[in-house]
Length: 185
Image (tube, rainbow, N blue to C red; front, side, top):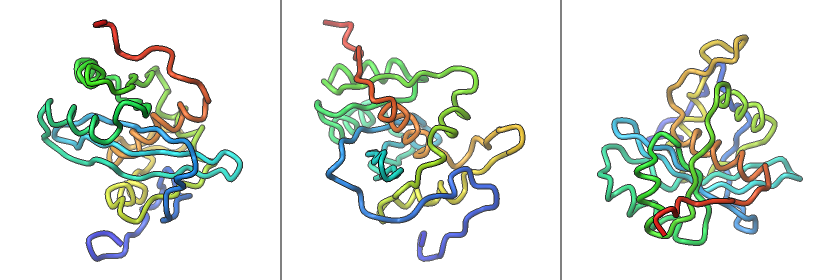
């Protein structure tokens, strides 16, 4: 349900395999962050159970028109200094400012075809979205292919999903963060 109405999945959704459920707190987790302004700044907590082929998602932030200070304070309040955050690489100045607060943050790697590569890596998993993650549930029902044959997603209704993809692909790689934005030291 979304705002008192039953959600309907649009035809051609990119991630049809999602269910509502509780976050598995026994698993290691990290955070994904997609920057916006008119569109929302979106942040979520992600954990992955590789054996069960499940990705757990909890929406942490979904706010538009935040100031630079608000986004930095918000990310710090959510992630603290111990958890990994993988962020949209389009905002290096903001990433640097968040890192100055002690957050372990790194920009996602972007390259031609990376959006579809991330979708392919994550499509075999069942996404488990917490009940209170209203915007994430809306996006899972509305993030669709513009042209499925050509593997072109419609760049709309995907802010939390992008954030989730950033951290989920990193967690699946099993790698540790080699360098944080700490060049000022």
